[in-house]
Length: 122
Image (cartoon, rainbow, N blue to C red; front, side):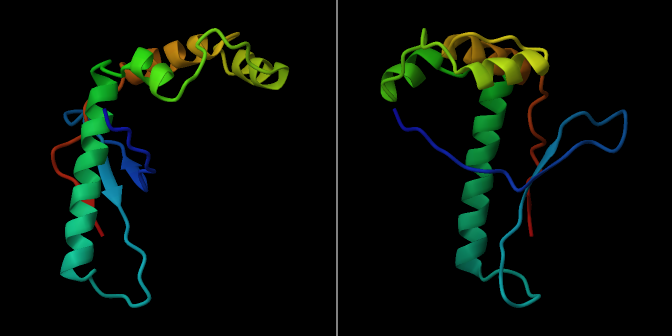
C-alpha cells in the first residue's frame, strides 16, 4: 500500500445546525494577492481530494492499524514514555502502549462526520 502524510490547512466546521459536514480548506501561499496559476490549482485540488479521502476513511473507521504497524515496523505493544503517558492521561485517554494510542485515535476519528464534498482552494 501507499501511505500519505499531509497537513490540512483549515477545517471549517459547519455554521448551521442543518449542515454537519466540515469543509477542508487548502491555502496556497504565493507572493502576490492573485489566484494561484492553473498548475498550482490542479495540484491543490488533487491534494484536497487526497485529504478528503483520508478524512472520510478515518471517519468511517477504516484506518488499517495492523498495516500501519507492519509498514513502519512499529511494535504495537511498545510502552510509551512516562511523559507521553502523563499527557495522554491528562487528556482523558490513559494510553500505556502505542496500540492504546492508535485505538484512542481511531475511536475519536470515527465520531467525526465525513468531509463536505465541496472542497475549498484559495
